[in-house]
Image 1 (cartoon, helix red, strand yellow):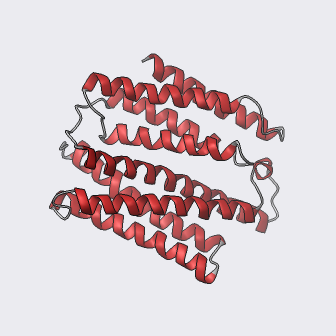
Image 2 (cartoon, one colour):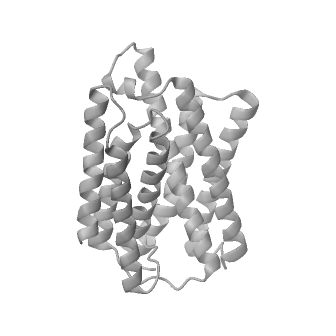
Length: 260
């Protein structure tokens, strides 16, 4: 319980410090140290649970917690190199909530997975974390464009990079996530038995659909220079499909039907 409380406190402290600094137009400070401490405690909670359970728990709440840990790591890595610290205001509280839910409802006996299936699972978590950050960037891009088009001046606008820079970061993140998602699907084809079985069919179909939408978006960016609202709409549509594919299927199978 101590790592959980420690991580939650540090996540919220980092987010609070970011809010304060954004209001005053300052983006440095101690928040990266708080975020790193929170992520270390977050990871420690999972490691201790895995040692207790005898393996890595990849069930619903544990998976969400791990994805948000990846999101926090990516957010911190990006933010310390530029003006995207505002992303932490959203991501860090989400990570804190996910960790708390996992502590309260997670820690289920792990499924026996060989190294190939574990590789597939970890690639999936990395892909989801990266593309979830891309979805948040898309929302920020949409809010920024909307505010500028209406000539509305908000304090949070100063915390964001210029539109072109934010858009470039969005597509770099999508490209990274697309590569990870491609590797996830490839390892699924190679290592997962009965990929088209009834309990996996909808997950497979929705994942492939999401991959196709992201692929079309990247192709449109390369060939036609897609940007702005088109990028936002395609990114969010692809992310909705991906969330339904992974967490939707896990929610139904594990929490509704109570199947591992």
